[in-house]
Image (cartoon, rainbow, N blue to C red; front, side, top):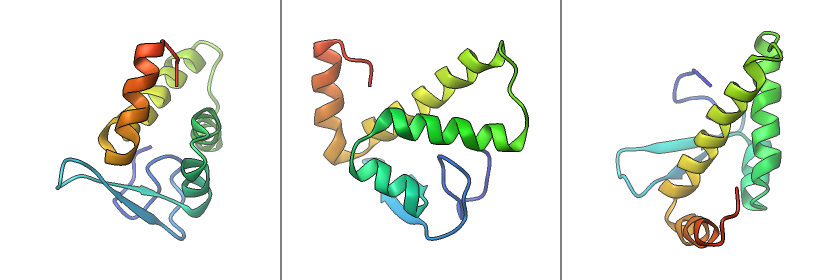
Length: 101
């Protein structure tokens, strides 16, 4: 999602933002209240679907673009998880077990 630092990095919503500092001190992610609720429950597939829905609200996504965009959003969520100190352990465990997200 392309936006200034004053919008949600997942859906683009600009209201009620929560900051998520990362292990890289100069990098901070932002999430709106709804995305923050999804993050708190670690419902990663739901976060991916919400982000895809936000893209669809901007413009139609063709059938051919869907897998490419989904892959991009999955990588975005994976990056968020790997940069968050409290989520890094869970990401590493799931990689070992071969789980997707």
